[in-house]
Length: 447
Image (cartoon, rainbow, N blue to C red; front, side):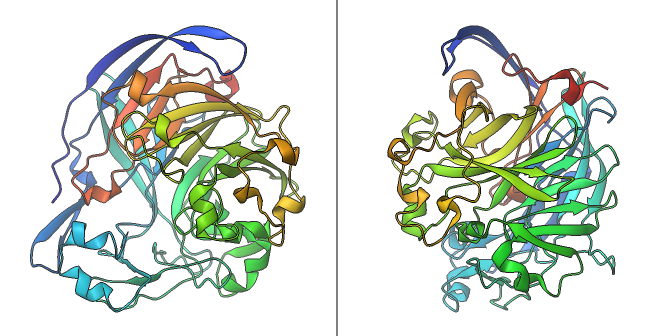
């Protein structure tokens, strides 16, 4: 089921002129190089499927990425998400038609072929001479007090929508309030981590050894986490419990002085319902003051036209999604907006955009909702300004699909990494180094 991880490094050079979305036009030369790995530590486990066949899974290490300026050269931290999983509608194509019988038991079932997977932080090292990378260290996520490892199974949620987790036999799997769907990551000077996760949705502070110390959840969801070992702080806007399933917080970033965190919802909220989510362009970007311990800003980011994604144009507005954000400076953010096959990177600034935190747009009762009004002009709401910095269809024709992680290396080079979904469809993890697309403040990457 899984293709072996291939070893190769390809170099592509694309010369282009990019007209910025503002008044300036700048000539750029974008260089890219693709890295692969044959490190046996990425080979994870073989699973027997319902049809008797086997599936070979690799570690998924590309859901998020970060490099701290104090880290050694060519070393990055990455994340896996919650492990191999799929909805009942997706499962037959991946696991075989036999799984359809299991899925008939539950209309909202989500299949976990490996329910024992532990969400983890991975430390990778690149070899620029060979065009390869390897796994140096794995930090499994743990509960704050007992130190027991968590899983990627579901939380016992009543405010946000949720699936029912089950294994391949149809056995319903237990919920746990300490579990997370680990997506985005940053590392601070003290060695601790902050993560963004999809289920809550929430952001959480982790110790250097992976214990979930503190988790910030929507204000109306505190009771759902009353049995968690982590300290639960219910201070995120309650409107976030309207996130569409599997479309929570994927991106998190940190300002150069580490005073602020930024995080972003992957897609527009299902506010008031899934129909609104499917047609909406307006997703939400947040700023969190670490010292004050609270959200201090919220802005609107408008997703691109789904027809503009060159490898897989679509009429469906919910195809584009946000999979990662990266601070290039204070209040200057690189946003990774993608479909399955095409990735675009937009630089945004908060200057001139409307801070809607605490406004009527954060109230569930507001009708029509922000998500139901793609034309923001009549609302007197100005979205963040987007400047296109990279489009894989135009600039990196051999880029991998499902790019979900970004980091700035020690020389200012941009690193991209894909989420291979644990190899359930045979995809390998690849890393792409990019020069000429973005310029980060030296405070981000210089020691």
